[in-house]
Image (tube, rainbow, N blue to C red; front, side, top):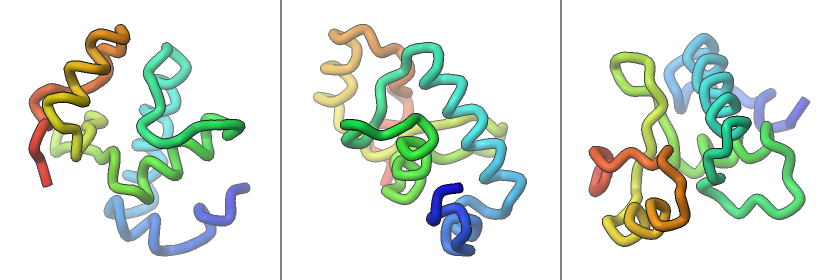
Length: 96
């Protein structure tokens, strides 16, 4: 198990263990379907990528339980679109 998952800070960051588990599971599905990592992923397994995305406030669950990204600039969104990554949520651009 990753050490970060043993800490209460990550649980509190997302709003509880159930939300953390849901966020991890949904993001893992997206990564397995080909979504690009939002953090430097060199040599990391997908679980470590998801944990880092949470810790760096790159992803969160919205009110309907869907994974959303935050902090992407319009340029980042355009770049991801050109690279074929359709997982970037355009509606979250500028959320901070």
